[in-house]
Amino acid sequence: MHTVLKSQLARCTVDDGGIDIPKLCELIDKAYSQFDIERARSERATRLMIAEIEAADAQREAILERWKQEHLKLDIALEHMAHGLAMFDGRGRLVIANMTYHRCVDRPAGTDERTFAGDLNQFKAKLIQSDLPLDDIPEMMAAGIATERTAELEDGHIILINFQPLEQGGWVQVLRDVTRQQRSDEQIRYLAEHDSLTGLANRVIFNKVIEQQLAKIPDGLSPAVLCIDLDHFKSVNDTLGHPVGDSLLREVADRLRMIVQEHGTIARLGGDEFAVLIVPGVDAASAEALALDIIGAIERPYLIDDHHIVIGASIGIAIAPDDGENTETLMRNADIALYRAKSDGRGLAQRFQPGMDEAVLARRLLELDLRRAIAVGEFELFYQPLMNLRSQTIESCEALIRWNHPTRGLVSPDDFIPLAEEVGLIVEIGEWTMLEACREAMSWPPHIGVAINVSPSQFMAKSLVATVKHALRKSGLDAKRLELEITESVLISDTDRALAVLHELRDLGVRIAMDDFGTGYSSLSYLRRFPFDKLKIDRSFINDIAHDAEAGAIVRAIIQLANSLGMATTAEGVEDRDQKDMLSALNCREVQGFLIGRPAPRERLKALLAAPVRKIAAA
Ligand code: C2E
Ligand code: CA
Ligand code: CA
Image 1 (spheres, rainbow, N blue to C red):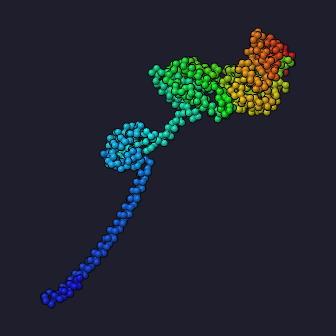
Image 2 (cartoon, rainbow, N blue to C red; image 1 turned 180 degrees about the horizontal axis):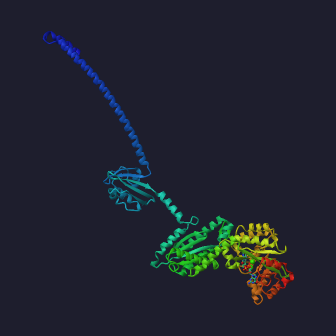
């Protein structure tokens, strides 16, 4: 365009004189070229600027996009997070919250102008309880104090709410569903407080419950503790195995629940020991009546895995505050009474009485002593001869254990065998006796047998047959010379199993005698079910035989019965000639007693066996 201007200017030059047109044109040219340069420059600058701006825009777009992506992720994370999350501002208005929070507070997302107060009302509608109040949260947040609440909702959920104040005012609130954790905590607590086998309380919680009840004594309540111990449980466990033992314990627990119901707390203290706390309180008579009901229930036969099982129970009773004002004393005294009940004959309920402790202590000491005696070998066997009335010769000798106590001297088996049975030491003692007696018999003339006593729990222990086999093998004694004496109580608790063991022993060639016949149930059915080799008529009948017609009649009947069943008879406790003569007349096969010979140490017995036959017969 400036070219047009230049040509016009060139035409003007003719008329206007004076102006140096060419010069002017040159200047203009210059100016224009300068202008062109500037324009080109500015155009380039503009292009550059645009490019820069576009680049910046693109960068911003990218950042924005990235930010959007991040935001989206955060949103997704927030929305899908298991915890409820909400943020409130300094005035308690909801700033942001995720779905979980909304679900928990039951207001559709997007409801505008939500406040903490409004949400709290909503939340309270389904709240059963919270550990601490929720209304004071805004004040606590304003004071900058972080806090936590546990809330139990009516749908069974347990929510832990954490409130975290923010520096700029307001707070963040996190809701966590802790139902499962709490339930597992509860389960752990349950397991810690209960016996897993029976579901009954364990000792820890039982003691706690007693403590709580004792705190109420001033209100006139006197709770009673019953300590229960099962009789013969150990032999069931030993003979039928632990699974049957476990089922039996569960059944016992069920029977206890049936009887006690809501009147008390039942616990399993361990093994076959149970306890009941009767609340709110009872007098001695009703505590004893309940104890007898429990014994009756436990004694009813059980059918477990086709096994008929009969057990019993002994119970010790302690009533607060007379028998103990604190848990420890009450429990100890109930235990002492239980110990007494057991030693008085089992199947009994016994209330604690002052003075019982000493007797129990003595028993405990005896138990410790007995364990030591086994370890150091303080036992000795005495032998008592059994004489055949017809041939007037000794046929066998009964081994009778003695305890050579370092301070108490010779202790009678009646004073320690029952305890050894009770505390499970009888098996070890029995193993020793079996081997020792078989070995000793090997030193006697070969026609003389040896009789060994086997007590009920020893008989029911799984190891008996193996023990007998071992003793025979080790000593080299012919099985025919060995006679085992058992009492009929062996057949009462688990007849089938006892019969199986008897047959196993019989198969070894060992003879079996029924000891103390006439003192127990004397169930004739046992005699029919197992052909005993011998009946040993209890001393109590022989005592009176010479001057009591009734005793005489009983002995006569027993001998006739045994003879008709093909069983031999031994009369125990024969102390004088009259008794011996009478038994002879009644056709009794053997006699045993002080008249023939007292139980004697092995050396003395050996001398007796070596003596001429006439000397013994003349005794
Ligand atoms: P038991 O099997 O009835 O043994 C007979 C008991 O009567 C023995 O008592 C014996 O000394 C006593 N005796 C024998 N003849 C007479 C007599 O003419 N008059 C009187 N008054 N008593 C007589 P001991 O030795 O004190 O044994 C008592 C019980 O201890 C035994 O009764 C038996 O049941 C048990 N026992 C003894 N040794 C053992 C053993 O090694 N193992 C087991 N498990 N029990 C044993
Ligand atoms: Ca005996
Ligand atoms: Ca006897």
